[in-house]
Image (cartoon, rainbow, N blue to C red; front, side, top):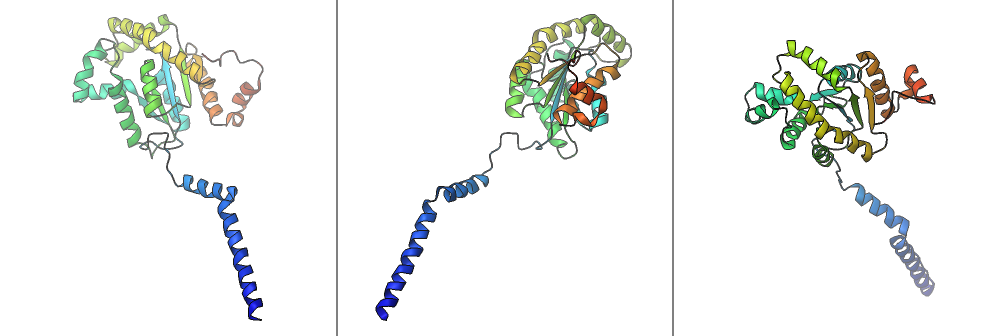
Length: 266
């Protein structure tokens, strides 16, 4: 009887040992355990100071192309925080900060401010407002390909790049009219001409950079028509990347139409 119990005990131990070894060698079990361990690791591909799930939209265009006008409408309808690189820099000049003193003459000459300075101001504003906005709307930046590359590396990729296409003559007319009341030091003919040259030389390649970076990332919209007509196309494009195109009848019709002449990619 004792021998029988002894053999039974040995048998049970061998069975338990078998299952323990099988469990240890089971690839699925090991994979699950490895997945669990990987899940505990924090792998960040974005700036940890910036909020997750907050889309970024760039609004690009020459001086006087209507960037501010369209940004006001986007803020109204989508609640994004509007960050104007130019306004951030002008505030620094206005309050006489060290950055403002360094950049004032560059702005008067229509030249680009160093990317480190502009990016620092933008990141600061994004960090301060990361919990109070649904997204970020940035106009006047990036103004050169190197700025776009630095932003991509240190902050992230925009969800949409809106390029407001406007003839030089129209932009010149708008800027001169604005200069009558704006009080901006860069709204004079000499600076306007320099800004045009800088835009063509430095900023137009940015549009091409983003267009080559990812299909559908850039939309090119003529900003010559009335502002409300221009905005309709931008509005539909934003609904598009949000997956809400069909919630608006006008945008849904545009989305399902065979031809779309004015909503074209740069």
